[in-house]
Length: 254
Ligand code: 13P
Image (cartoon, protein in one colour):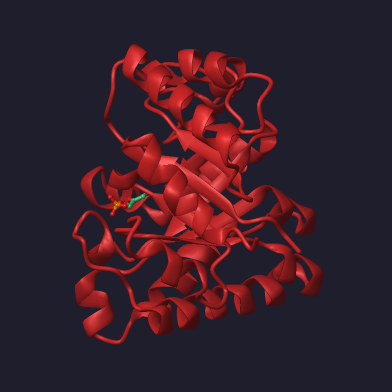
């Protein structure tokens, strides 16, 4: 069975020292009583180097929260996948709803980033999710299908082994409002069906589909038991080591 993946998305929070301290605390708690999952933290660009240094020679992965699709060039303010690899990143979060909705990233842009990150040998955490209006209009499946179809178009069949999908309903992010287990299971099942159709049965059954959106220590146990949930992408509650590890331990089976 695939081990669940639990990722902390620290968003735009923390100095280098604060982020390294948070990473150190997560490591300490994980060593004391391990969560039986793969852990990763998505730190701000400026803290990637110290966080990687803190976590080197551990099993905790380091992720960036975004990147550009070109290797280098006149792209003021951007960071390339090879720069992320150089700083020691293992993964990159792409297509987060805050990138899509605040910074107007289109599906086509997300697709270019997915391709570039994979080309650089890094793992992709691809976020998809509908807005409240889209859900109310009954368009959830349609929106998620479109986001996935465009982001994954043209990839080789084995590329899927380096991709994790995170379902993050936009209306559940930072709102304290979760999607229900039934809502999550329906969407995750749909995602798995699509991936099976596009990448084959083996890949479709192996891929981890994470849930993100107001995952907290008090609701994580129920969410971890939900069918088709292969891990979490945690925002606010990942900014404290104790709550992040408490959430991750909800996947422990012994
Ligand atoms: P919250 O857990 O703060 O709702 O954020 C979710 C998220 O956006 C993770 O990427």
